[in-house]
Length: 143
Image (cartoon, rainbow, N blue to C red; front, side, top):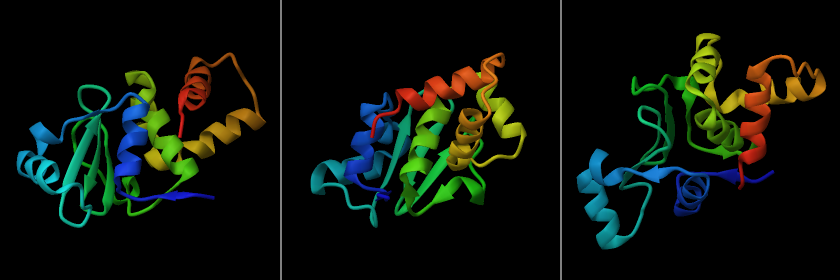
């Protein structure tokens, strides 16, 4: 299974999935450095947004998933992502606000949403709108 690290390749995957790079406003010095010398994960930070408060941040080599602008805990940080973890993160940020909040209240880590998706597929109960949102979000992710 392929793994992903903070890189230009991962940045392009996020952009392809609807994220917008906001490095210029969040980290202006790093933005200038990236434009002048290219992206080097060890020396730069980058930020990507798909809605108003949620971010995916490349904090040098660490990938952080920030929900509601409050920072993130250790469960939502990775140096390397599996395909399932990357799909989970992208799908999570594409979910409706109420669904994202409900998932976060359970204490689940954003990169582990694929476990919930797998459970829904194995035990279909389509009467729950939350399950339908998760299925749709995962089907919309392209790597």
